[in-house]
Each structure stands twice: as structure tokens, then as C-alpha cells.
Image (tube, rainbow, N blue to C red; front, side, top):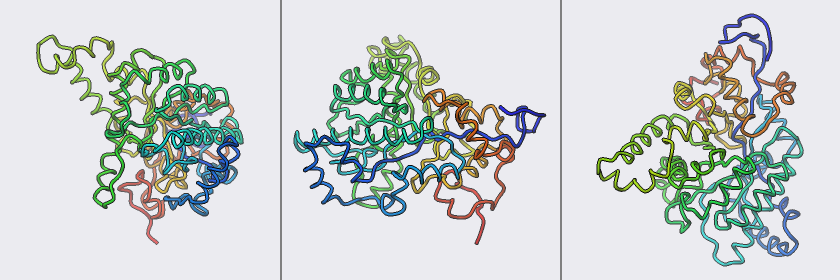
Length: 423
């Protein structure tokens, strides 16, 4: 990629070469009326009644801010202006008949009809998303939604998504304590793991849905923020303990918008626990763990290295310091567009701040090559676009000088601790 003399950026090439940037964390969804054509006609009357009473609980889904989720041309213009050539798209807007976004824990359906129409709403979103991705072939990888309460239906929906170009794979909902759902280690979910491995559909676990519902008080909100990623991390060891990663070695698991720095310590902690449970010393850990440990051939860190990835939204310089412990081939940069905390429209600056001094070959992996390999993007197809809009190699290697970004970029955690420009 590129040619020329040593440019001081860790590899050969020109400082004026540009990186291909694929965001591993974008969000989109239809405006509420947009979903109606994707519902079977038998749901139209109920949808009309639901839509008439619908009150949007999220201010960033209203007005000009909201249209970034469904205005296809505007979205692509925003991302190109921000240096991004492609993205993996998670849901954002509320699917038909749901009380809130599916990236949070849902209250249980009250009736069978409520359950049936929610399933129809998820399918409507998936069909909308397939068409949305088709607007820009090769540049959008949509993530299909499923419902763990309907395993057979979810298997069929995964097959539909694969056939209709949702190359982002599957969004794995959480199973919060107290929800009444079987935890992710349960064998009832085995058909989902089987079909995802068979079709090469990545299993994506985004932060949010695994935590118990947020309480009404300000202290509840802060507690939720402190704990939400911890609950999301539980999916990793649940899928190990239940044998899903053992039985399906080609199934790939992605943890998105959950940070990166937690991974080395968590792998060390789990490796230590698993080692003690594998000992034949009669300890309590060994007694409790024996029946499960004998079914597993790898340590947690080995499962991670073989099958796991991180969608690293807002990655910070300190997190790049542990990249080799996480696995440079496991990290995929993300912008979180169009959320309030997204790096957009300052993604070039966020990348320069975090990736300063990192060798070019490693930056290429984390900005594009890892995501391209996992989600099937064609880098040769994306190269001419990146040559027009991508961040320059030299600019990224040099880093971001102080006061080069206005204060409104402070909404993005990638800039935590940065000295902003003053008015």
C-alpha cells in the first residue's frame, strides 16, 4: 500500500499515503414510519395504532439529529467528511412494537400477541437494514437482530440475513439477571451457535442489553454506567463455560463499545481460575469446576486469541499501550456514529491522538484489515475512496498537538484528558 522511502512512520511508504478507515461501531435504524412497508399487512392496523401513540424517549432520535440514522446520503456524506470509508451497523432506533431500543434490556412481553408482534418488528428492522446497506454496496455491513426467546425463528432469520447481504452478522442480546431468560451458557441456544458457525456470521455482543434495567434515580443512572460494560463482559466466559466456543471453533465473537483495557486483566483472572479448577488437588475450586473443565481444551486466553475480537470505540492512547496483550489482530477501531459520544466529526483527530507513534502495519490492522477480514470488506474496492478522504499516515504517526480540536469534541471519551482549544 503506497511506495516510497522510509517515512518515519514505522514502515516504508509515504507520509501522504492515506489509511483505509472502517468503523466497527456505527448505529442506524429507520424512522418510525419507514418500518411499515416491511411489516406483513396483518400487522398494519396494530402498527398504525402503536405509531400514533409512540413517544420517543431519546432526544437524539428527533429532528435533525435523528435523520442521521436513516438519511442514507447524509450519513455517507458525514462519514466521508470524517474520513471513514465503511462501517459495521448496529441498530439504534426503536423497532416496531418495542418499548425502547433493542440495545438495552427489554421488559418481558405481556401477551403472546405482544411477543409475536415484537418478533415481526425485529424482522421489519432487518429488512429495512438490508435495503439501507444495499444503497452503498461494499461499504455497509449490517448486523441482524434476533430474539433469544425464539431460537427456531432466530435460526431462520440468521439464514435470511446471510442470504440478503447482512454481512455484519448477528446481534447477540444479553440475558440480564432477573430477566427470566436462560443464561448464555444454556444448551437451548446451541442451534444459534451452529448456524452462525456454518454461515460464517460473526456473533456481536454490544454493550447495553446484558445489564439489568436502569432504576429511576440519578444514583441508579450512575450505577448503570459503572456496571453496564461489566455485565456485557460476562458473555465471554458464559460462552466458554457452556462449550459454545469449544464446539464451534470457527464461530467468531465480537465485544463492541465495551472498552479495550479490561481484556488483559480479565484474561489473566480467568486463566488463573481455570487453572485452579483444572488441578487435581481436592480444592473447592477443583470440586466445583471439575465437570465443566474436563469438557474444555483451551484456556480463556487461548479461546480469546482464536475466536474473539473487540469493536474498540473511543480507543484511547493508554489502551493502545496494551494492544499486544489484547492482540493487534483482535482490535477494530469504531466511531459510534451518530451517538452523542461519537468521535465524528473529529475522527481523524481522535485517530491521530490515540495511534500516534504506532507502526503503520499495526495501525492498518486496527483501522481496517481486521474488520475487513472478519466482515468481508474488499480493501481493493475501498482503496480509491480512502485515497480521497482517509487520514494521512504521517499525520496519524505525528499525533495530535494540544489545542488542535475545539472543546465540543470533549463529548467523545477518546479525547479524555486532552487539552482542547479555547474560544
